[in-house]
Amino acid sequence: MKCSTFMLGPVLLAAVVLGAQAQSPSTIKIISSLPHTGSANAQTMTMVNGIKLAIEEVGGKVGEFSIVYEPWDDASPERGQWDPAVEAANADKAVADPDIMAYIGTYNSGAAKIAMPKLNQAGLLMISPANTWPGLTKPGVGEPNEPMVYRPSGKVTYFRVVPADDIQGLVAAQWAQEMNCNKVFILHDRELYGQGVASMFQKTAKKIGLQVLGYEGIDPKASNYRSLVTKMKQKRPDLVYFGGTTQTNAGQIAKDLRAGGLNVKYMVPDGCFEEAFIRSAGASNLEGNTFITFGGVPGDKLTGKGKEFYENYKKKFGNEPEAYAAYGYECGRVVLDAIARAGKKDRAAIVAACAATKDFDGVLGKWSFDANGDTTVKTMSGNTVHNGKFEFVKVFGE
Image (cartoon, rainbow, N blue to C red; front, side):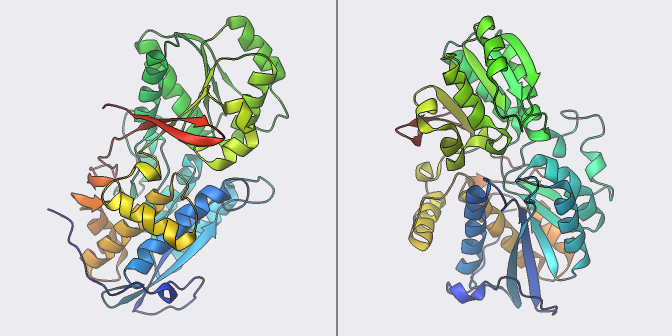
C-alpha cells in the first residue's frame, strides 16, 4: 500500500507554535529530543529547522488538528553533550503529556536506549533522524537482549529513517581496502554508537582480509592522545579508524595524529559529519587524508524531492543545511503523514499508521519501514575534507 498524500493548505510560518501548553482535542504536539547544549547544537538545530519546515509546508495543520512543535534539549552544561538524566526526564515528560503524539529523536544511540522503553510502554511513537546502533532494532546483531529490551509492550513503536551501523561499518572497511589500506588501527570512544560502529568496522575488516593492528577505547575527555599516537606509529598502520563523534574528541585525535608525525589516512563515521568536526580538528589537519562515511548523501547531492528540500531550506534559513537536516525534515513529514492516515488523536493509531509506511516518496527517495522499524534505504556515501570544507567522493554500491 502506498502512503496517501494530503493537501493541507498553504505554507504559514506562524502556524508552528513553539512552547505552547494547550491541551485540546484539536491540538497535537510533536516534540524532538536532541542535544542543543555543546558542539552538536549546529547539527541538531538544522534538524529542528527541517522539522519546522515540514510542519510549515502543511500550514501547521493536519485535517482538524493544529500541530504544535517543541524542540527539547537532551544535553546538559555539565556534560557538554547528551545527558542520560535529561533524556530520561524528557521521555517521562512526553509520556505524561496527553497532547504529545510523536517524539522525534534521539541524536545519540545511547540516549535512545534510555527513552525507547519508556515511550514504548506508553505506546508513544518515537522516530529517529540519526540513531544508527543496529541493536536498537535488529535481532541478533547487538546485545543478546536487544531489541526486545526496548519493547516492554511487545510492540514496535520506534522507527528510524537512517541506515544502521552494520551497513556503515561494512562500507567503511571496504572503502579502506579500496584505498589500499591493508593495515588498520581501530579506536572507539567506549560509547554505544562509537564502539558499535568500530566493532562493525573491525568485523568486516577481518572478514575481507585487512590486518587489524589494534582495537582500543579512548578516554573522550582526555586533553591529548600523544602516547597513543606513539604506540600506533610503532605499528605502522595505513589507516586509523575512529568510532566516535565530534563530541567524543575526534578532532583532537586528528590533531595528535598530525603533530605526532603519523601521516596516515584517518577515517571517521557520520557522527563527525558536521562543521564542528572541521573546526575542532583544524582544517589543515584533515586536508586530503581524512575520510567520512555517511548514511545517505550530502544535501547538495540530493535529487527530486531531496533537491527541492535543499533549495527550500537554503531560501528559508539562509545557510547550508548540515548533513542530518534532511533526516529531521523526513521525520517530520513521516509523522505528519502518519497523523493524517490515522485520522485521530490516538497514540496507538498513529504508531500503527507509521508502521504501515510503504513506498514513502520522500527526500531520501522512495522507501518503506520494515517489520523492525528500519528504513529500507541503504544508500551510503563517502566524503573527505578539501579546502576546509566537506567534499563528496562517492556513493557506495554504484
